[in-house]
Image 1 (cartoon, rainbow, N blue to C red):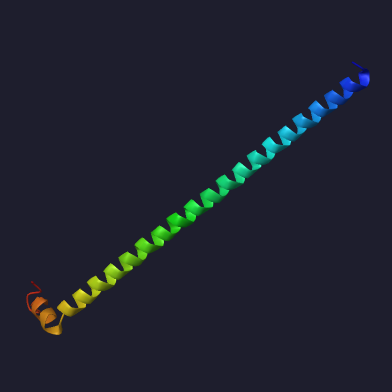
Image 2 (image 1 turned 180 degrees about the vertical axis):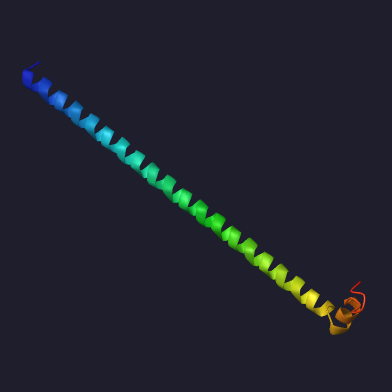
Length: 89
């Protein structure tokens, strides 16, 4: 085998190794980017769920306030007011 044939095979093997290393490096970068994207999506989902829970609690609070307002009338407040002479309930 000639010297030229060995050199060309070594160069071809080196090129193949470089190409394989490049493909692996690009794959690792792509996996890193996918991981970051997944983390952002998860964070947005959790934020959205928290906002929905807050909206539900706001609705419940409004409902409770409405019920309290319907139950508290001036007549009931007068009945519940302490006796002005004794300051006792």
